[in-house]
Image 1 (cartoon, rainbow, N blue to C red):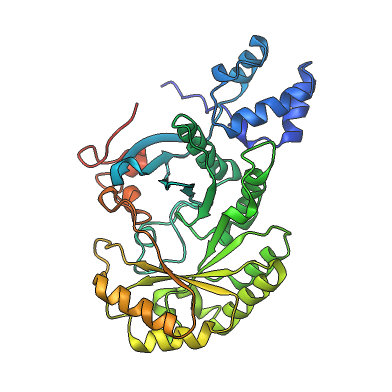
Image 2 (cartoon, rainbow, N blue to C red):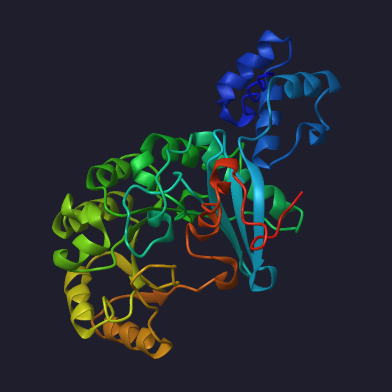
Length: 367
């Protein structure tokens, strides 16, 4: 029986210095590496790199594939303003990313792991199996693919949020390498101030991130302001309780000068009460902090409900009355399985996950 040849390595896995070395060995000037580097950041295929000699393009195509991801499904929502993508990785696992278009900016919600080991009970990603960490190229290729799609629309990728599948700080080295690639002026050139890294509360990694010299935005997935409740909603709290978490976030804010965003998924009757507002007010009052309220997007089999709009407004008013800066996140893509992990979850049926395929009756296919 014939054995399939292993796939070519993705060119996006090479550093710029490694790419220069590859060029030099084959007799090409080193500046060609910078040209290729820029093309990769735009998601270009080899045949689209028209300013390169044909011989070089042929050599690249014989040695590499341009990207580490293969799109297997796409869902459009909000009249085309939101695009949710499912990609297959080497090894057949799948991950998601979401492009969100706004009048003055375009954001990409990016994944850093296959599944998530934190297992928050309200999260669709946490309900599925955890696979592995993404490699740096698998992270940045999500952004490069988004940049390619947006360029065809006359748009530019302006913001990246690490709020997709996974706990970014549990995959620290790969995420940091990806961030540095995204802010590289020879690449996408995204301002670090427009990159948000979310965490459920890995305190040692928050402190480490503060020393990296990158003025990123830190988003803490808080969801409860007392340990008793947060132990249930965010299980990592049992290792790093609120007192340690908020102290680390304060240190990040002081070191970087960046306001910390505290994420709060509103769960009806669970964390949207007067008591919760009072506890959150005491916890964050006077800090360089902002609260981002997120009405729960229902997840199958999760024992939680979405609060009514009036309850969202009431909780928002309670927090503002306690001196906190608050916004309610714009809910996008509800008709497109918008909750993180929901599109991928559709592959966990009849063995489709092993093939990296979505359910055909549910997801619009491409190519």
